[in-house]
Length: 476
Image (cartoon, rainbow, N blue to C red; front, side, top):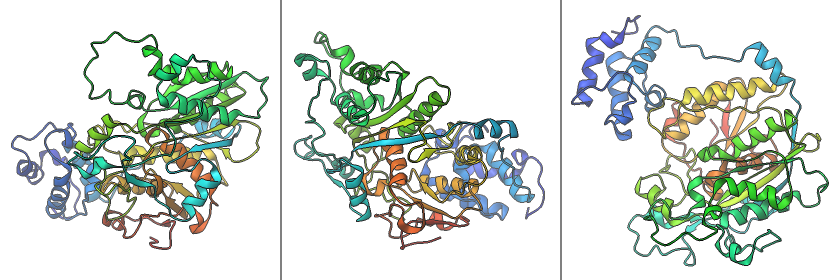
């Protein structure tokens, strides 16, 4: 069965026997394999077995991109027949409509990042010098002396994040004592973003990126309270109030909503803000996102094996072993003034039926990037990519492989700010966007990858065309 056209591999004896080697009972052909008993450690073994059986190159990323038996069979047939699948591109009508949209400018950037980074200047200073803000959990946050998993003892913490100065937030002293600190963090950042802007304009939108669970510290492990709820309990931890309180305090009447799409929340909020501006629903918009580390999720993610045992995001590195959580807040103001850097295009998609609930889908990522790059129109080269780059063995290669396929023909510098400040979760995407805005979009002057020492072996096996990592350590 060597490099010859195949029919339906679902009825091929060699193909079917492979599944009997990995499963006591072969799962349904349309069930994601990682949800039916196969684990990620077995992916290399399955890839090797398929490679030997059909004399083609099958990798673990191939299995993540084609997570079911049917999809694996179809993809193998494409490889064996030398007729790879063509991926969808934008129609002319969609491209024309998106190209005609007005630009959205970004400005008034505010930071409250790990360490003491409170301004764009301090952020750039720290990143240029390759500083890393991962540390053990501070004694004034919570006790980790009895923690058995090393990954639960690390994080990227922001100074003074729990002792912010209180402005005129239109709260009584009692409410102020009971409000969740994340609401105060978002309020403080929003107030700074709009300081000095024209106060007569009230048609301002507010779009807030957050993790629902980050607004209720410890709630994922807490038993239902037997105590009567306090009068502020309903508003103190509400996601809708987190955004609504900003508009209330600042007097804004434009669209106002929270966005919780996990790690992409802040970029989805940016997309919605830009869409709202282009549809004239508001005259300007604030995008703000943030969160504060707490014990509940920290312990849960550590137990699930999601966090790095070394407390570092080793983006694209052979030492990748999970991500390191971070906290902080970042925001900016969007308008159509054409002053400052502009957002030419954006798009939103979902992974769909990937290998598991949290596994990446390279095909969906590729189509998303194709949609965004084509919406920008001709004459705009992509020169830099701020990647998600969480520092997972298979997640990073899936992302970069998808980007390389979508942006083929471009010379692109890849980086990820997570090596410096960890994964800020709800705020991760826009702090990455702002990293691009603060560094020259050329050569290795993009934010350097401070934790990159040796390239992830899965990345080495990819055809990355003109992609390279923005550090002198490893160009591909």
